[in-house]
Length: 443
Image (cartoon, rainbow, N blue to C red):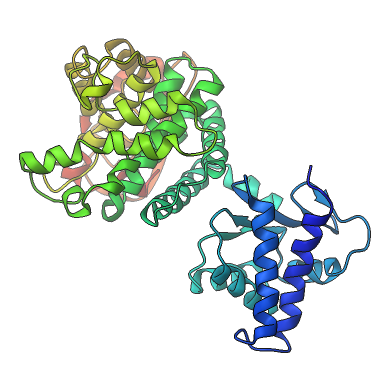
């Protein structure tokens, strides 16, 4: 529980600076002193925290867990500003500096209204440590698989930016986002798995991190992990490649084969990542081990050498399966992507050496013979995309028919449902690359 004075100083400092801006330019000494007072108030409150929340709770201003139920200078002014901007609140993240707070004062003093205007202003000022608190309806919308996936991309973007700036990333948003990913995985596992087919080849490191987290949660669900363990594997997988930010970016993004010297540089990323993650607040040792040992292999002949003799959690081996599957199914300059069925067959081939065979079999069994995103040919010669797989023991599929029996691409695809006895109607998997189909356009 916060003491009464700290939140009051923050509100008075913020509203005092806003009022000062109406009298003086930002460069004026009087306003600079007010900004410095605001900086001191924020610094005092955020010490030992990842962020501070300021918001409007049913007409009452709050700062973290402190409610302004009694009159306090500045509370009405700040409530009116939040209402004008249609904000439930703001989050000030650890690392916020005087420049960003001065920009916030300027933004709040402007007469623009609506959350979109606030977000655009934050973006245009290059502010990285302030963001709006979304209202309840938007939070509900965010719990769809696609929205949770997009939120994870945003979190990874911010984390990677923090590392590039030499800062230790905050862990609270990672934890919050992974909890949402876990909930979707528990309720709609195949829908969340489908999100791993979204690939942004220009931002491979970002999307790969999120896709590996999605896939690791799927492997974990297939292996009956508890909700707490799913959270651990999700965080570890989301952060597994963070050490690559400490490696020469030209090497990471090199389109062709690496030289032996370059590969030795890349092999440092697990240890570098483990060092970064180990400094993040609230990160458990098993998560650090996932980052450290995701390339150590099932036979413990991988890298880094220092991890080979460690007693490692099964979550490490499960993350390795996810990492390998995503690499196999991703288009790179040196490889064509494998189909889902082709990738699971390849996982089987390398299990026992590179990958844990038990966990591989659990994963493949959970996905079913034709995972979501598989393009398949029916005995009628129609071609359809597996867009949904039932999570119950009785296997059910929904196919989106894209090509008719004559091979004509349909202008309006239609769905058909197959149950376990009818799945034999599928006679072959089809490579979407050869048919010119981008499967994510139809999922």
